[in-house]
Image (cartoon, rainbow, N blue to C red; front, side, top):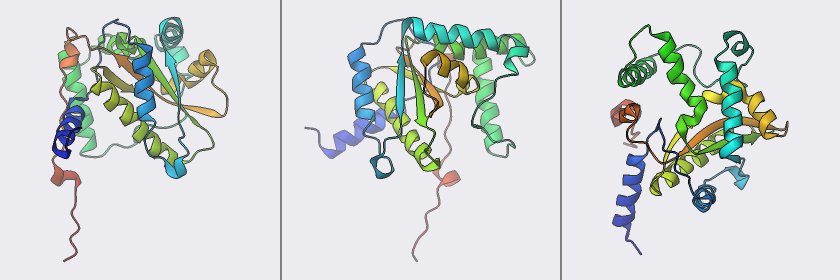
Length: 234
């Protein structure tokens, strides 16, 4: 059994390795590995141990069905206008430093993809790859009971992070995606999600395709003094 120092080193390394990947190999992921990831991830804390999560694991035809249906809408401006998310992911009014951080990751991504400012069709095509799950062989669609309140959404974030870390520890790549939230009704219809469940997000899961240029994206993190305040008792 590893001692505390060894455990700390391994856990820290896995957290540092985790990143969003936007290009996957078609290599299948064993079902047992997916089950192991979800089983250990369900150890995430939740208020009163209510565990407010449900996961739909998609591979093959069902995953392709969602891709086809969403792309048909996304590529038609008139149809796309009719689809709106049930919850707002980003702020309506951006402030600093969040606006600059968002712009930087966008500019860096477009630069790696070879897309210049104003090349809207290329931007559209890059965005469309979200709905192909970036070629990942596995997609996780996550829902939450509609009866739950904000606290359970906080719990859900811990569950999602566990999935990403557990996948990384097993040599898998992942990408948590909010891109599908406008198409919640399409997803609910195809997956026959009960009306008392609300769609939350997707996670693309698989093995990284290192030949995909945008996978070279490196995102920065703020220094501690930007978001931490130590409140001394003295």
